[in-house]
Image (tube, rainbow, N blue to C red; front, side, top):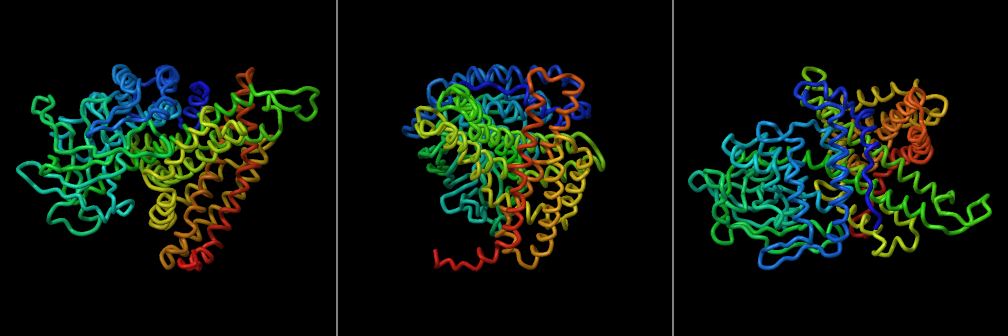
Length: 590
């Protein structure tokens, strides 16, 4: 496996040109963050990712975690790297300053999280879940729970998890059976949860589980779910650790990928009931957990970017080094990067990464504006972030798998051999389209909650806004103007179809929801790479381009216009005309 190189210049370029870093830093509450400081943060994060996390990636993959009598031991070096992570304050970067965080905006913390995931996806999941748990507690818990848990979770001394899934309840959370019985000022939690990422480990002294459970008098279905803080070790009034809670990791899963991340089966209450504390009001747990889930969905979309970047770097370095065959028009054998089809594959990987990264960073910047601005500006930004969250999660992870698979193809036969390391990226990427809501769930969220619910107002306004770029695309970018004009028309047709069918024939829109999501992602990604290309043109004209960085951006965008944007038409056809065959195929015929 090749070494990981932090793509610092790429990250800063997208942060500035798509994430509007200067504009975000000018918003209230960000006075301490300067462009120079942000650049230093990204550079230092890159050093930590490349120097400490990347070397552990293959170790975690091959050695995994060991389980014995409820105790999980991580692979060699993992716990030490986590201690360095905590000691250097990385966990606190984007957290609330009131509880010890550094208060950086999303657009600053996002590239750091991307670097962790590129270097070592399995390792990065521990921090990602902790961040989500912090957000849920901060937004919904009592002041007492915040004071007791947030400072050490933000510092990273304690980690966090989310406990949703049960053996009989996968995505159908209405089927949850875990119980919570009041006892004094707390609750006794009993039940089993599965697929709990970093549910048990040896890298931190306490693990704070957020658990969905039902009270005895809860109404049926999702309206009867409450959220509880259930720590591995109880916390004394002075903040010190007390007795071990009645919960245990009964096993860890054996998985296709992310072997370095312990995925636990958690058993609560084997000896009478684990002590838990209600978050917010009873029976509003699913609503509260969505705070954590939406945060996680953006970060999982970012994982699609991150694993694609790692796979691309490995394929690129192999293609630059591997000498085989005589390229067309040359007189001697040369590295395979000179063969047209290998260049096509590598440029396809690079163009998709540009679009994917821009997608997630754009959503992050909208979240920052929604949080720090006011009035119509904040309202509009929040609406766009909500609209694009399922697209960022679903489309970026699907493309992450595609890029990782293409990376194996660039290697040829040796890519299929585990020792090369290319196969790990594909195995690791495979989970990203599943956890935190499958692509189908994201797609139905886009169709139903994000388009149909507000009668398409936000979606149509966003497409109209994207159209404004067309007059600026000429010369070398004319192909983008042509492709995007068609893409915007196709998006308008798709939105109109959802509005016409969703209320009366919801099965029809459900059958076409994934093509809708891919259409939305493909066209929005094209708009974003066009913006990058325009910025690259301007900077090349004013600053020069000695390394070809800006020329590469322009050519990558042109490749996207001819190789990726045309697929939008196919997605539209599948969405509008494909449901009759899907719905008309009898289940017994399978």
